[in-house]
Image (tube, rainbow over all chains, first blue to last red; front, side, top):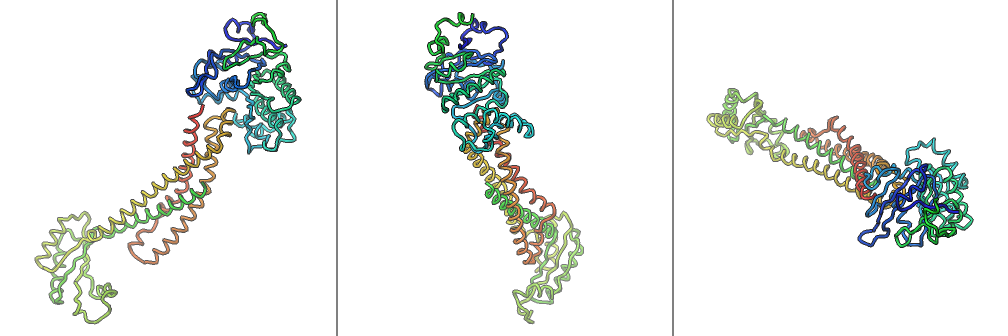
Length: 259
Length: 275
């Protein structure tokens, strides 16, 4: 059964217990592109360490925009965002790379570097972090082994299947042991069997202490991770997390469920 | 990019060699003619001419501004004029002037020339004294202008090279936008991304610089051989010193420096526009 997500106000946060550490806090965040209407409005939530979150919502609900704010590819138009205890809105941009290195991101379109092999794509975050070549061979090989692609280490992304590319993208996202893993529709391009496998990978990572945020519009995926917390976006607003899209559907309030 | 830098370095090496050679030529010519003067006595009557020359030498010997003088023998004058007048025996038909090379003391002023001219007029009315620097002044001025044009050309080439690298860096950045973005999102800093572009430009600039330098040296050597064949004293004054060659050898290094710095600044300024 999926657990409750702590949301919206301080009284909700208290229900999460004192042992949990705040990783991300959004406070009344709004986002608009140019002069268009807001694609995200009044978004407030807190993500805690070692928890597994699903971000659901129909296509166009604003999931990708919210994730962009999470992985610091976008600044909000208004509101505040705190990450790892620091206000990232007022943070100088030269300090942002250090925050990004604490995250792993699986992009919806994978965003593998075409001219690099699977090995080099997975090694990229380590190289960016300044890990010496001699020290990255083993962890990258192990990671490729973990996602079942050791035999495809030298293959270029163009020669990999969609599922293989997805696993390379996941391996790249987790190779640096991020504190938070953000995945945008990670099962969108794979068959159901592979989707289950990927969820198992995320769960394994979550058990190792990584906070996981998976954006998906596939409600059937939610049942694969019973301990997950669910956020639902609808028309740019964060909907009541106890709404009908949760699995299994529950009607009781957040405090009731937490208690 | 490699060939653009090679061509720019080649042109800069040739321009630098030209500027330095002209600079040396002007300096050497100025040093040669400063304090030198030519005294001519244009008198058709040989006896009158000889008498005036004798008297003029007396005035020169007595003047405090004159360091020394030498009456140029008639044979030497005839030899100098041979290409124009031929070797005819009838020197009476085309009378040659008497010429005295005069060496003035250092720091000589126009007033010294004027005083000397007045003194000469009294004993040798057909004498005329010309400071060599005066009649060479337009030539030296033209050479000096050429020298500065060559230096301006070097500055222009450096600017064009920087502009070419700027364009190339922007194109490379545009062409690799997706990769740059992903490296950024994986935590790559501006400095790390700039270094990737710098390294790429550095290799192009180093290879291009070397090729351009070799081509430039070949052109200089060829031009030097052609000028040396002129056997002109003034051209010989334009030969390059060891310091000049060292300066020319620095051209490709400066080109590499400009290219790498421009690439870095271009990439950093472009990245600053992103989050």
